[in-house]
Image (cartoon, rainbow, N blue to C red):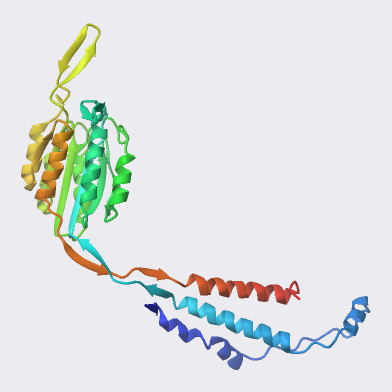
Length: 328
């Protein structure tokens, strides 16, 4: 369907006629009393007399340009067919640890040892893809926390920004409390009925200005639910000079505080020791935080004002060249 978004702009159409009727005419130009002979006068004398056609033609072109300009100001647009969109009314903020400990290679992905962040990206990417209808955001933290992607329906952008994250981008230490506080602040500004934080870390709170328990209490007061995920294997083999030894790479993981954060807000704590458990955790999150299927409709809008505007500018340029004498 074709329509004008601002039809009242057509009220400006008679403006040139009103100016011609109401404004006083321009005073006739007074030529000099003394003319200096010029050879060009002979050439003009031999040419036929100029009629009023070129002037009338320019006038009609000017009126056409004005018509196109007013039409562009009315903002013509084409409305497409209604398109159904699933909206869940749920805001989901992913909070991801990028501290130095995330580079430990204690996960196996496709039979290849990978660091914790690489494994997390592979599983979280599919989780984000499944959250159709949710608004998803991304907070990254290390020594400091910052908003990487605000809440958006564009899940492809969230997944792309997640793929571009690197370990140590936000510092070497871990500011869990600051990360929860930032995520809670961004969610509090929204009107969605369901607001969820998914916190993924492999360590303990070692930095920041906000204590994690205090941040969780503030989140609970705002009706936010926090799910925490502890990342890291319980054991791994490390080669040394005199052989291979078995170590626990998750000694720094503070599971007690992660459980307490989840319980304070009515969420749950999960433990991810390998890629399989990560996949199970995200599947469980899909079950605990189901995607609602409320159907909304919108009509795609294609703006058309650029065409009459471009034609008006082209006519204005042609008239300017004509008046300067560059166009015969």
